[in-house]
Image 1 (cartoon, rainbow, N blue to C red):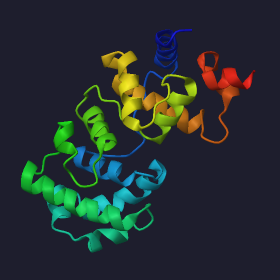
Image 2 (image 1 turned 135 degrees about the vertical axis):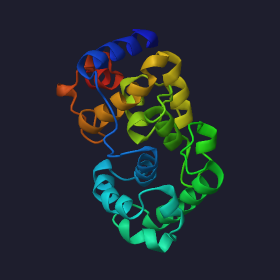
Image 3 (image 1 turned 90 degrees about the vertical axis):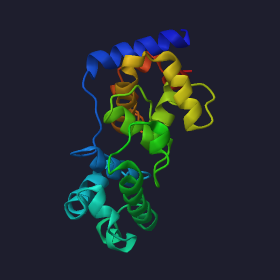
Length: 213
């Protein structure tokens, strides 16, 4: 099976069996999603969704969060991983949004990456989810699952994974493919004990093929 065929079979399967796939982070607007994605780094979406309602009730927009110190933000996110760093990032991010972007979350990936706490993955999530751009955000699930299935080969970092994935995924499928891979990794192709018996794409999976040999 060629790599192109592997991609096509995976896309066909997910298109049929997961026609609707979207982020599990709860958000109301671009700012609240940006806050949630920053908090989600090395933390579960479930935990983030438990924290954001109170946080965003207190700081509902860039202006109110920009007026706060990291010490004021910290108590709302203390149960999140790396709360000290993330409190500083949120405070600085909100200030930059207000001062340089007129409180509007930018659509441009390069501009997004100027914001404190925003790396390439977070920027791609915002560009994809909010602005419907064909951006492939590579988190730990996407990195692991795409390599395990055999969609990526010898990828050493998230950027290489992103580049290999977008080479074979049609532009109009890139945004949803990000969610396909995340959800597949979260609920089927789990890190420690992948549920291969429940997997609809095991016939094209290099990991599963190796299990049989």
